Length: 188
Image (cartoon, rainbow, N blue to C red):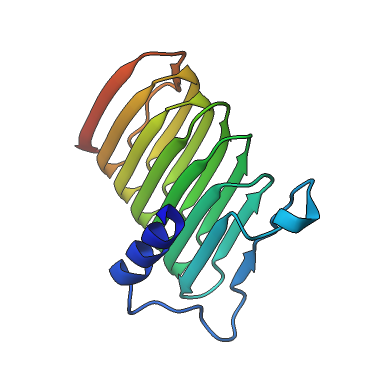
C-alpha cells in the first residue's frame, strides 16, 4: 500500500513529465536480493525524466525499499542507494540544470525517510541515513548551493532549506535523537 501511494503521488505531481526520447538521458534501476523469489515483488522504484542528459540511478539491495526520482531539465544526476533489513523511502525531485543529489539509506529496525528537492542550477546535496526512524527534508531553491548531511543512530529529524545562491554550511552530523531545522537565505 505504501509503495502504491508513493508512486501515485510522484506520478500525480508530475503528469507533464515522461522520459525523453533520444538524447543522453539514462536510468539505472537494479533490485538485488539474496532470495530470488522476492526479487522485485516487495520493493518499488520509479524514475521520471524530462530533458536532456539526465541520469537517474536507483539501487535497492534489499526488500521493502521505495525510491522515486523525478528530473526536469538538463544534466541532472540523482543517485539513490537503499539497504538494510527494514524499509527506506526516498523521493528525489530535480528541476533545472546540473543539479546533483546523492542519498544512501540503510534502515536497521524501522524505516528511514528522505525527500530532496532541487530547483535551480548547480545545486549539490548529499545525505546518508544509517539507523532507524530517521527523517530528512532537504530543499534547495537557487543556484550553486551545497548541502551535506549524515544521520546515524535513531530518531533524527532534519529540515534544511536553502533559498538563494552560493549557500553552504559545514556538514551536518546527527548521531541520534536529534532534531534540527536550518534555514539559509541569501545571494552571494
